[in-house]
Length: 438
Image (tube, rainbow, N blue to C red; front, side, top):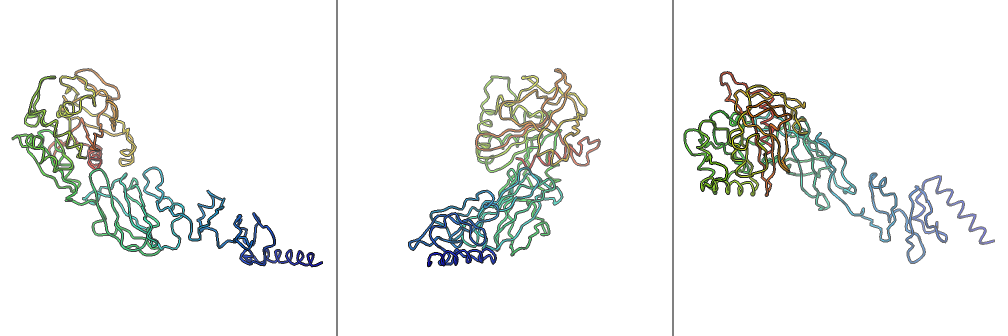
């Protein structure tokens, strides 16, 4: 009779719990025998974990888990439940592509910590050229002292967003090629910090001690025009009227002091920059410059070379590019080529996959193909004195050992305001973006 009364009492008690959503698992009197796997009160499945007096641990023993955790790992079994919320991971998801948007914080970011949001735009020092494909990150700790790393990739309009940022003073680091910018911000609870409202908009800086640029001038090419349009500062070495450019390439210490070196095409005076020697003929001066460029790029330095200075690429990294004529490949005809943009980042920046490339003079260097691990960014059909080439590479790049980037382009840039300039807006935009890949 006593057993029957106890059974009736327990049945009524459990029914009452179900109706009122009480956490009956916390009440020792609710346990009678083995309740393993039984749904109690709020529907949370408890697991085997009886303590010494036979009472099954209730919801207070379960780790604190987010909605995403619960969906991916519905089994909350644990022989040693973590009442502090389980193991936290603090990396924030970065969605695929370069749209600049982030996913939600990963599993287990401390819910007790207050957070905010940072939005901004990646831009050149001129404040108007917006850059997609840049990495933006914040490395910090949350209120529990746990390391937190948040990352984003800037989208087509240069915009990015970092959510779930711990409150307080934070440093936003923006990286693109050789360029870096650090921006100090203060994050407040559930508020958004808009870096684009800052005086500098968070753009890369005109002069940055972390990124030193050098330009070797040319007589038919003026990459410095594009650098100036972006608001970048650079050192100039004469490659036309003196051998200052050659001396830079021969001086290992001075060369290694730069992060990026731009070598313009030289037509009538190319030997002032690089000695032209027959294939297989040794030249001590050339060999010294080759060795210096290998060291320069091995330390992460980047190099931009155009048109008739192709010989620098061929002497220093033979086999990376195939030329239409190994002895002298400068045979391209004057005219405009409708080129295909084969690089997705370039397509995003330009907003299209077809561009016009104008060659305002004949006898430009023609490529027919590339070697392993060389990226082709533009292709087009070429007519030349050495024959026609379908789908020929027009702009290529490759990484060297040590992480340096080498870019070779077949087209030029006129001086700003020069009479009869045929440098198209497409060509300028492509080169602007190229600079931030170096």
